[in-house]
Length: 121
Ligand SMILES: [Zn+2]
Image 1 (cartoon, protein in one colour):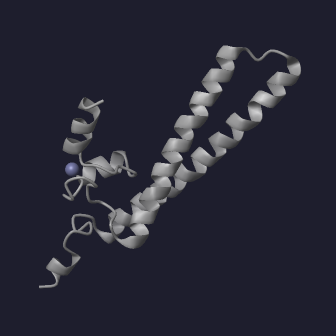
Image 2 (cartoon, rainbow, N blue to C red):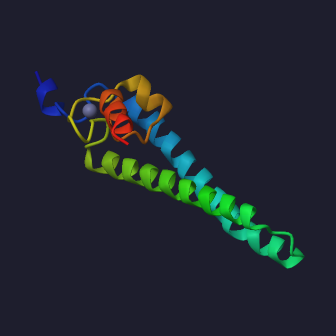
């Protein structure tokens, strides 16, 4: 009866699930790092041609900001995997649905808490 010791820490996720989610997170991290490189590199070339409008610059800033945010979430999720706290909600401490993690592996909150947070904005 060793099940209890695994307890809070992602007992609903099998080692295979975790391996797949970790791989997904690594891919996302690479994708976002690449995206950020492209976003931060692109404006300079456009500047040289003098074709960069203020609107375009704003889009770049927003894209870079959201890419950085996702990247930070992904890195935090990898950190939680390393310390064993991955898979439980930051607010209510309950297990986050496996289905939800499959879609959003960097999810910090369960579906219910996420809804509450979004409603509170
Ligand atoms: Zn929750």
